[in-house]
Length: 75
Image (cartoon, rainbow, N blue to C red; front, side):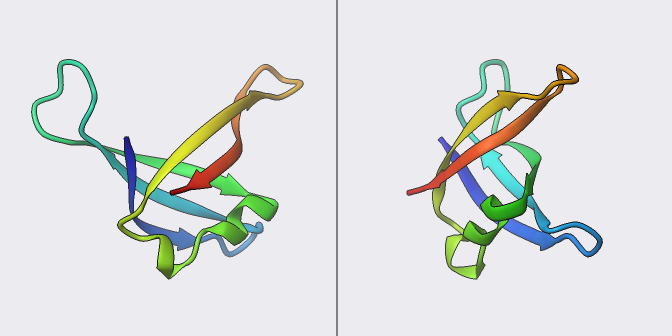
C-alpha cells in the first residue's frame, strides 16, 4: 500500500507534489519513497487531512505516450 506522508502545492500550475512511502516493494529493505505529481481537479483531494492515509493511484497514457496520474483514491 502507498501512504501519503506530505505534499507541496504547486505555484505556477494547479497541482501538488505528493510525497508517498511504500513498504511493499520487492528487493527493498525498509520503505521506498516517491514523488507523485497530481494536477488539476485531482489536486483538490490533497489536503492536510490526507497525510498519513493510504491511497490508490490509477495511471493513464497521454497522446505523447507519457504516463500521468488519472485518478487518486484516498482510503
